[in-house]
Amino acid sequence: MTERLYYSDTYLKEFDAIVTSCTPAKNGYYIILDATAFYPEGGGQPCDIGTLNGNIHISDVQEKDNEVVHLADKEIPVGTKVHGVIDWNRRFDLMQQHSGEHIVSGFIHAKYGYNNVGFHMGSDVITVDLDGELNIEQLAEIEIKVNDFIWQNVASEELHPSTEELKELDYRSKKELTGDVRIIRFPGGDTCACCGLHVRQTGEIGLVKLLSCQKFHNGVRIEMLYGKRAMEYLNTVNKENNTISTLLSAKVRETSKAVERLLNENQNLKSKIVEVENQILNDIASQYINRDFVLINKNGLTPDNIRKLTALLIEQNDCICTVFSGNDEEGYKYAIGQKNGNLKELTKQLNTELNGRGGGKPFFVQGSVNCRYDDIKSFFGNFI
Image (cartoon, rainbow, N blue to C red; front, side, top):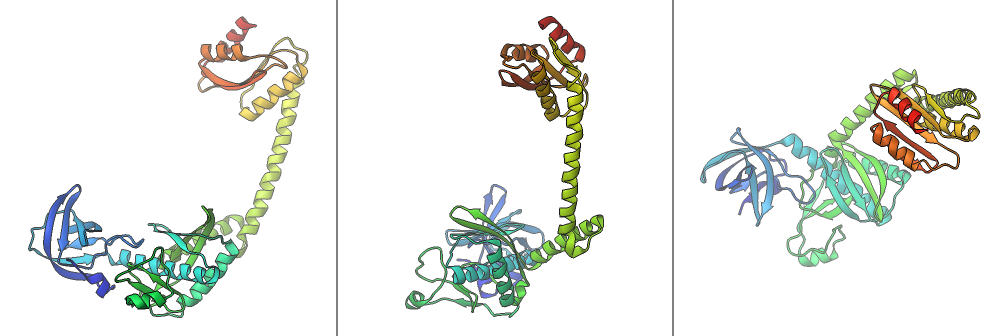
């Protein structure tokens, strides 16, 4: 059985070992070593990656039948001595995320009694699912307390309690455990059964940033970042905020007020534009009163304005009223209306003959056609 060096020394970056098995795999070769520092995926923590002998890439590590199996891109004969090097930046990042998640979950459990029922360490953010509800204000309070705890630089502990000791130990676990149970403790922060890898001192986590809290099933899902990921996130947010500050000529700490002011101004402008558009539509409609048939082609109308103009027309004309907007190259949007009318057959024939699509209520339809305007005039000239 492979000696698991990552448990005896979590900070071991390089090691020597002997290949005990090498079998073909779909995307390379499954390698088993007599000892390894490569952590296999488990306990919510992704696997390590790295190299053997400098030029053999290890892209996946899994535990199968109590063995640690490495996916290598090249074949290695059994009995070969290899030198392994793990991707330490990736490993340490995962240790920061995993350790930080423990402490956040521990603080929430201690204060609210909620359990961590789901945990995912993604390549961008960490998510934790809780079986109880929290709001953003409560989350902010937890964030402050967790960071204060992290900065105390508390040493982590690894425990392997006896069966009797385990019965007396207050620890978090998603299921009842027996046998050799590995417990990770951050005294004063969290005690949890876990097979993952963690930092020696909480200070190595750096900081925690809780990003969001959304309703999820019967509880909430929290997104969070720790250490370098949290710092990179804050740097990105700060850069974006500085850009907004410059664009809006606002102080960095007052960009939200500037954005709110801009949105209000934009809304006022939109309202004025709608007023002008409505006046233009009313002016156009006033030119078509008591007609036997109305056909209007007005370029530049939005689908909403096409609808509005047609609605105005059918209010003052007891006939079929049609509005088209577009051009011969790109086609035309249309609306057709008739007070108390039934336009089903007309719409069907229009769409068939003019390569169109659309529909609606019996007395009002909207759609589009792909044809020339001369074809539209010809269609209605023949139909009416």
